[in-house]
Amino acid sequence: MNILEIEHCTVCYKNGTPAVSDVTFAVREREIVSIVGESGSGKTTLIRAILGLLPPGGRVTAGKIVFNGTDLVTADDRTLRDIRGRSIAMIFQDVGSSLDPIRRVGAQYREAVCVHEDLTKKGFLAKAHDMLTRMHLSDPDRVMDAYPFELSGGMKQRVGIAMGMTTAPRLLLADEPTSALDVTIQAQVVSQMKELRDRYGASMILVTHNMGVASYLSDRIGVMKNSRMVEFGTRDDIILRPRDPYTVSLLEAVPKLGGKMYAGN
Image (cartoon, rainbow, N blue to C red; front, top):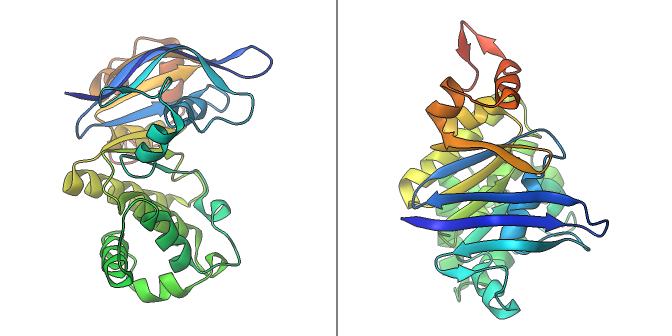
């Protein structure tokens, strides 16, 4: 069963040039879909359009984005507010830059969760501690009491994933969640995201330029170039039997060790 269906979606900014052109694909229940492509290909614009979080001047000019039966393109603001954070959550590329540097992590975490759930302080702390522990942050109390600058990049990224998953969304959107991390931490964060999918049954859309990460994490992969989806298929079809020359070039750029693709494929 599809949880999200994107049909002939086009997104334009003020200059009228499409940043996303006639893109169609679907995401199934409990599925991880990766959208890969170089910078400027339109992949980040695509997932921002799902939640109506486009920068000023950006709008969906054609097509549908249907989540659980609701067209998000035509939905009113109240419907979108109810869906954002509760049913669909988003992890941004650099969580550290989205956290307020002069407020403790715990206060920001509670604000992000309690806007969607009516929790007591005790109830919130229990949920937050559980999710931070699942993200392999061994001292949740210290993390919650810290300011963002006191945490490493990998810790902040795990906090961001924990914040997004605490309300148990049905769909998690992740925009380059590992790009600011070193290779070792990348592997840990990617593995933990897969664990969360297996435990909570959430579907995920991962935007990445790293075909190695996509090959490890995904059930299906879409390849974008110059605003268009040039190829979409199962992981094995894209990795082992690519049809588009651009996909082939992305695969050739992936570092290999011992004849195998990086990230465990």
